[in-house]
Image (cartoon, rainbow, N blue to C red):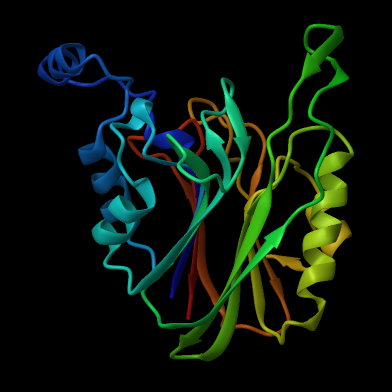
Length: 265
């Protein structure tokens, strides 16, 4: 069983492409999102359970595609769920999702080759629409607007028995991500073991283990993709699960993150 968590970065790519591909992109006047690269990345990763963050649906910057659907088709997913956290475009104009007729959506997705017996969505504690935060890199305060966050739970019927897989994308705001991870852990309290918690936590070091009490299954730097020096992306286990056979962080043709991969017996 292969688990993968991957911050998709809306399908954008940092890698140089062929001159012909660049010409086609200029002619289409689109952002650097190539759906063929996304498909190839998912096929290369070959996941059985795939947790995606920063997923677009019907966004102009990603060719108005359903990126979760593209990934599901590429991996041969039996079930998948896209959970929009906002309507509109992150970093531009957006509103809380869902809306009646959103022009585009953005959120997280969980995909599985195994049957899903039940889905569960977990909205995370909302932050203030805008607030001032100290950014150490530039050494002054900035006024920022924080996006809504969520988690999604898939109750899977696997060859090893029932298993709960969870995907989330937490805020980067110091302190607030801790509260959100605490809320995810609390919400999972009644879910039977084993539980796999995956996603981009926007925190590194021992914090995820200390906050959740779950066991990390892989420890590799995942960000930034060009020269990874810290692990923002995690796969944690609560309870007894299959034996871990191998782990790695993989750079593929899309995203500014590496994909975190765990192979289970």
